[in-house]
Length: 198
Image (cartoon, rainbow, N blue to C red; front, side):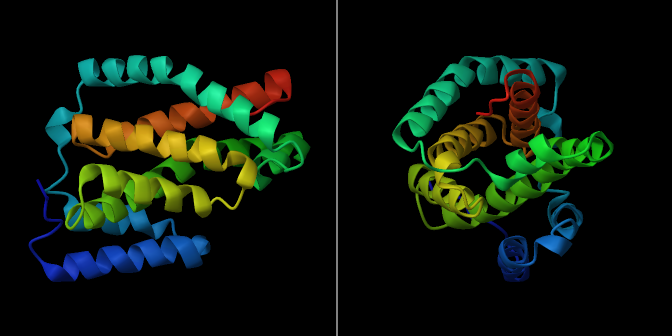
């Protein structure tokens, strides 16, 4: 069943503009969450944000972690000559005074902006004309491509597909943001404890 994005075509056009802002003008992408919630505040399923659902989604994520780790291992094994993402390299090389800024960006800012852009806007536009599966795959591919890293490509595709599943399951952008943030926290822990990233 195809779900229409917005009753008002102006909102759909604005969503496309916001996606372009994310891809081409990262410096002002912080405005995307503000505009998104102005456009969609009444449509967002705030009633699904319950403690039980939060725990359930976190448990689902923990079950998913071994899959991500396996995909990461395969990527590193088959693509040994490629570098890690710039954000990972910068985090490893940054001075202690700069680490807090990186962590806030990775754990809070990036998940909010990326999830609203890719699931809250782009995925909903695609779902207007395509099936959930096709829309999820397209979003996952674009999500991975914009990160500009071959080594992380398959991991990010896998993560994006999982986050789309979570978005469909709970019907609120809150849960993909929460689990994206949790994924990034796990990545940071692995970087600092094992000099290794997912």
